[in-house]
Amino acid sequence: MIATTPGLRLAAVVTGNTERREEARRSHPDAVLFDTPARLWKHAADLDLVVVASPNRTHVPLALAALAAGLHVVVDKPLAPTAVEGRRLIDEARERRLMLTVFHNRRWDGDFLTICRLLREGALGEPLRFESRFERWRPVPKPDWRELGAPEEAGGLLYDLGSHLIDQALILFGPASHVYAELDRRRSSVEVDDDSFVALTHASGVRSHLFMSAVAAQCGPRIRLLGSRAAYVKHGLDVQEAMLRKDRRFDPTGSTQELRDSSGQLGSGDAVVTIPTETGAYHRFYEGVVATLRDGSPPPVDPADAVAVLETIEAARRSAAERRVITVSGGSTS
Image (cartoon, rainbow, N blue to C red):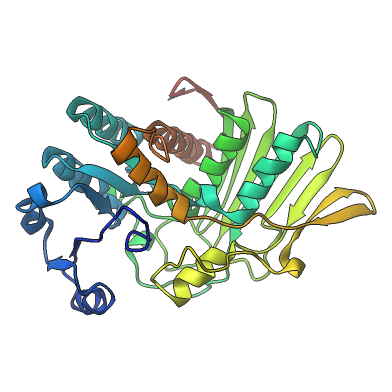
């Protein structure tokens, strides 16, 4: 996405992995390859922006090092393992007058954009309950840092898929006042949650029920939003994910429109109509980065939103451990 965004040039790639170095050399022959971040910082004067897309445990130290080198920073989600560390990054970026933003690309999923439009139009009446799922069937775990249980790893589905689900819910319906969660480990060899549920009661009164699983042999609807006059139901993940898996070089000019039989349904009872899904647009994130650096526009994702996600995750972890509903107020829980 960086290489295909007007106004950005992929200048360097940092990886110590031999296979990934070869992939980077083939895909981006004009980019300089470094095997360690320390080598990159020596060339900071030739760069503007660093994207931290590494394991979660490295997000904070790498982002701090990039900011110290005078570089604007994009950090993959989650921003940090804890809300405290996330706020530290925000403070550091503000002090240095540098951009900090977080790659919450699921804000540009086609189904999410569709819901935003339906809510703006009042097509459902008053929103009541939002159900959102990222479910997969992966009964055999893959060796991966996401499966590690040490707190600094920020592993498990709550941090991984849950970051997206919580971010979407908070953007749609505002801050959560109460959080309840069930975090389970269904596969015997994993150290972290792989089948989880989070319920949010928003201050607006809407309830969000968020499901994430690696052991869903049959998946539920991706989204079900119930309103006072109608409901919207949508199955299947955004097609951009499959496109990126097929071709790592993102083409923003390609079609990201879903087939009609994947479209959602809007209505009540038997009176339902097919609603074409809005075209997904992950490329808008980096277009927003360009606008921020050139024109001083707000970043595409406010890092304070990412901290709100981390606060919700921490409340969910506490809820699951204590088996009770957690009250959230101004960044604190009780």
